[in-house]
Structure formats: structure tokens, C-alpha cells
Length: 194
Image (tube, rainbow, N blue to C red; front, side):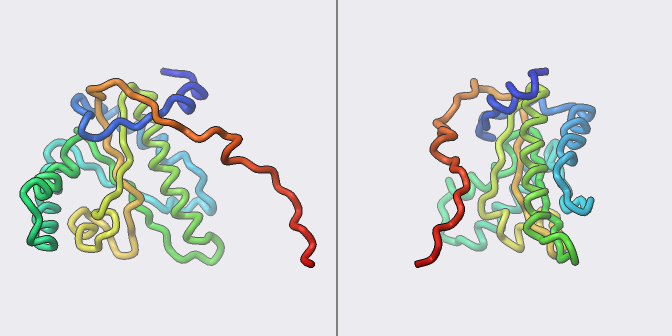
């Protein structure tokens, strides 16, 4: 297992279309999900849950999404429909991260949503630590109410994203990252209003 700092510094996404079998074993998946829940969680609300698409579940769900897409887009060409048939069926495992954020007397919903986002990020880190690769996606299905119903959302829930996990079939390549100096500033007190 890589050391923690090296893992954090070298994490890269690999497109779902380049993720193949084997998927994480049940034991490895349990490890990944155990890491996913170790995130900041103000109030200990656990404002997230996970929906797993394993085996042929991704193909079945994608077929339903393709039907929905075709109804919504009657002029869509067959290539676009075919893309929808593969949406959750390219990688051998897809973990949908669901935000269950809800009004709370003390914890803002935004903080709860951030906690779910952290859970998705931890899935990517844990998968890479175990020798797999992943990609976090959203797309129209993350924001469409009927797609959400098809994929298992309950009332008031929303998708943070879909984390595709598998064995990479291509080497990971890095992309340009911002230099810390370009995105960091030190706080200065505001100027006195004139």
C-alpha cells in the first residue's frame, strides 16, 4: 500500500471507459466503504448513503436510463442512445454517493452536502490505495428527478456523484494542476471604507 502522502499527491482519475475487471472483492469493497464513512460529519448525522451497481446492475440501470433519455430526446441519434446504455455499465463497479442532507436545527444542509462530497473523494483514495482506479462523474442523471427515482433516490435525496471503480487498462496520466501560489492568498484586514 502506498504511503499516505504519496497517495494524496499522485491520485488521478481514469475514465470509466478504461476501467475493467477485476472489480474490488467484497472484502476490498468493505474496506473502501469503511474509508468512505470516515469523513468530517458535524453532528454525527451520516448525511449520505451509497447505492452499489455491481455485476449486471449497471447494464440494467443504464438500459432504463437510455429509455428515459430516448423519451426525453425523441430526435436523439442512435450513438447518443448507445452512450446512455453504457452510462453505468463501463466500469465493473459504480458507487453512487447520495446526499441525505436535510434541515437541521444546528447543522446547515451545505455542511451535510460537503460531508457527502468528502465520502466520494475518500472512495477514490481508497480504491487507488488498493490498486484500482476510479472516476467521479455526474451528468444529467445526477440532477434529473425521474432518473433519480429509477436509480433509487428517496424523497429529499440527491446524487453527489457516481464513482466508477475498476482495474485500469491504460496508464494514469496527469493533467496540469494549479500551482498553490496561484490559488492561495493570505488574509488581510479589509481597507477602511472611504
